[in-house]
Length: 88
Image 1: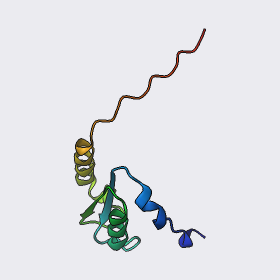
Image 2: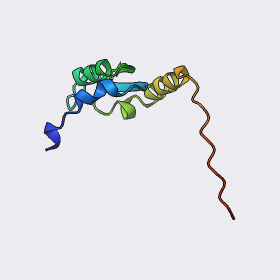
Image 3: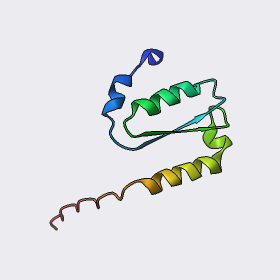
């Protein structure tokens, strides 16, 4: 059952930057869950907005700005490895 699924024990092993966005008036997934999620992630960052469950729709520009700022703070990623040439 989806309501019984819990992967919280795996969160500490996710060692990549994660932006968690929540609405302060989200009754479907209350902000306390977002707070716990961000806290459990080693590199989690939490943004709580004046919004409901659909914060990215209600606060589209604000969410976009937070995502852009989050990405701008990330260290440069190494260039992807080049793929081997295929023989013709």
